[in-house]
Length: 89
Image (cartoon, rainbow, N blue to C red; front, side, top):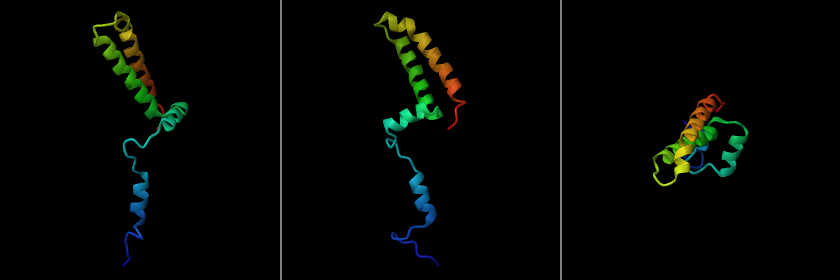
């Protein structure tokens, strides 16, 4: 029988805990390098932010130019999301 104490943890536990990513672990440099390497995650996040920005621009009643450009921003984000969903992970 093997002793799995704190000094000698089981191998799968150590390997598994090293792969867990907690919220807030990613830094801005990792995000930018993901954009530069055409990885799916950062590009989908950027496309989702564009879609959300377009919807906010559409629903605000204060600035006419934002309302005018809202459809184009939302459309750009949607097309961008469709294209980036084919990028590698």
